[in-house]
Image (cartoon, rainbow, N blue to C red):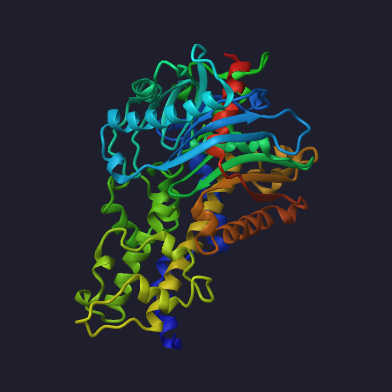
Length: 500
């Protein structure tokens, strides 16, 4: 790319700029915002009936499901002292296609029930499970929900392309779907635990992560199709109208001070104010938002999650080509004018020296031109698209890192300021590293998302606390397949706990 073109694309992408110091400011604004949302919002910071004290269960088998794919399998929890803490058995996965997302709840959950019955049948044939004894099932569902107890959940607005509206009894619909396909040789199921996928990731991480004495498994993070986080918060920090009716705890615990797993739903619009305050919402973000299924619903998700980053890049790329390079819209491939015509998956490995090949060749192959056009793809176009993808990814990493620090502060896991290091949780004892369990294809594969998120976290903690003489680190560690393992872990944990 010529020097003048580099300057042009750099200037063009200035609305996406987010550097270390902006990320630091954003983390402080997110802390204030999250404290408010936990105490006041009824749509975000949704408590589950799960206290973090119950996550040392012993058990055998349970089924679990969750995610935008349907995954069903058995989870076997192993005794302490072994190299691994659980096995996943007979697990199968099916994509939830768009035609199913557009169906009514009866059709969708009937399809889910059919596949649960298929895996249960395999379990019966493998282990000789009795058809007379109820099979406990844990459920993970990657959408906002309100829970009065661990075994009951009412879905809120789903998003992600699903047509189902809110106020749906999740457990009842799953049981009905299963019963439609259960034959007399299959056992009935009992839904013992229901949770959100972000909560399940935290549950799985806390249970499995081999923390050293100076470490604490503190938080679960999902950056895949969507973006969400879960963290334990004191019940007393939440709005009373959000209190679950029943909470699974150990005996003799102070209920208001026990750590409850909270599904933040941090991508919903209540979290937008810090982004607006720092001028981080660009005209392209607003264009993407207005074209969505629910404008204004999830602004943070539009800026950070895999479902939307490719579409954001498409809007910017078309704008750049037509306004800066003077390309006629009619000369561009039709797919570049279609919503979601440029995928996040394609952009994930779209960078110089990629194993996918030369970026110009990738662009030419992905967006083939018609024979009657005089327009041709050139290196400047490919380099511009790479710069767009990298700018989007860098901003997303900064936002996720800032939100992570803000959330850990909200949970009193790290100090509010350098001056209060000695009075906060991490300032006492030997814990100086908080570990965040992450999952999701977007943070793993999109450009340098994971590496840059960790770099932003390192800068913020260094800048905030190094001057006070306290070394504090927030580290990202993988926690893949937390949806299904978290559901399995919760079943024996719930059965062994008391309810307050």
